[in-house]
Length: 273
Length: 253
Image 1 (cartoon, rainbow over the protein chains, first blue to last red):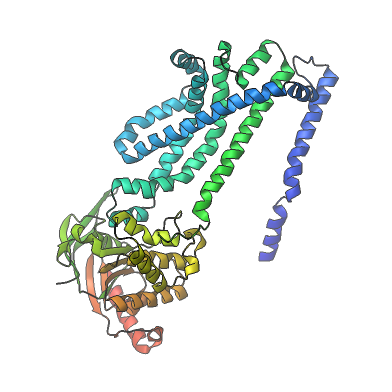
Image 2: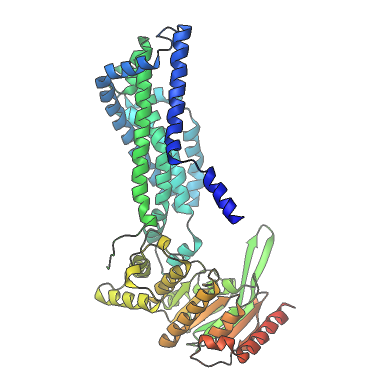
């Protein structure tokens, strides 16, 4: 019986080649349908270009896309780092006082629920039309998962571990440094995984608003320009570049997170003192 | 003077369902160098008593003295071993055992290193395991590390809250022997919470049977030290086990 269960479990798992081949097959199928429909229905290129046209447009504007992606990547990274630092500081304050948490947490929710598109014009008035505003928008959009996950990590401490620190007469500062902060690192990594995609979205939204000034040249500005000139193939190529940027940042954070969290699960070199 | 003196302790917990009295005028004396087990059904207040003695839970009424002193001022003489090993997962065994010294900013250097090596060897760690993290250890090894962390500060009193409850019988038996060895070598006082009658009889000089927040009966264990695993298979052990079991049953009526 147990053997049969084991075999059925094994057979329900997809072979490794299938996990790679299946999504590629879906991609090729959708691309083929897309191409066929555009050709068959004679859809004008400015409405929906063929997949090949998008790739060609991407190749033709590769220098522009690479330069703009680099600018947007910098803004996204700065926004993510800012949200990680500020979010962790806010979370630490929340963890230290129930009063602070009760008084300020509703405003963090408020920040999360206010549509960034609505406040972006305000941010431009206050902060200008440069990189600073883009980073600010990116930070505002990506900060909530950091605050939420780090606060949770700082507060969800095993009672026995807290008692152990109390038994040794640990100060509040020692408990924060040696117990709460290390316990919150997995929460920070989880928050970063969620926030990295949001940071890219925030940077592009910010760029869409500041692009009109011409003092900043990120992917948002490129998208604005292509849309204004009805260069749909190039616009779709730019959207693809945005997606690649998001995936790149996500994979980087994922890798960094797994390296950091290795300390929680694997062995380390012997430290004798 | 007793190592631990509890006088007329009263602890109440206030919750949504009203007030629950967990300790109800409990008094207990634990002589220096003795192993005393607290035995009783779930919810009778064993763990709460241990936490009050450790100064982790305040008593609304009554007093606890450690060698005649107030608990807070005598805390450095106490060490607590929890039911879960409570090791910090990002630290190696070595770093976990060293933690009390980091918090206390206490002595460092070769003496500490030598004490730590000794401590880890006493609880049965091989040097190749010192650099492992808790995720790489078995349940028994985690508990050994937890005991080593408690011993490293050289406490006069060990408080153990069902430390072996989650372990299998074989491992529990081995760790019982380890505790006996540690106490016999150092003459420490030990207050030990358990649900297991056999464990209480094997380890202790006296067993405090608790019921409804009080000590219902204090039973002296007639077996002399050193004790070995063979004791468990003797008829005297079985007979005394039955006596304690009856006392436990009586206390619940």
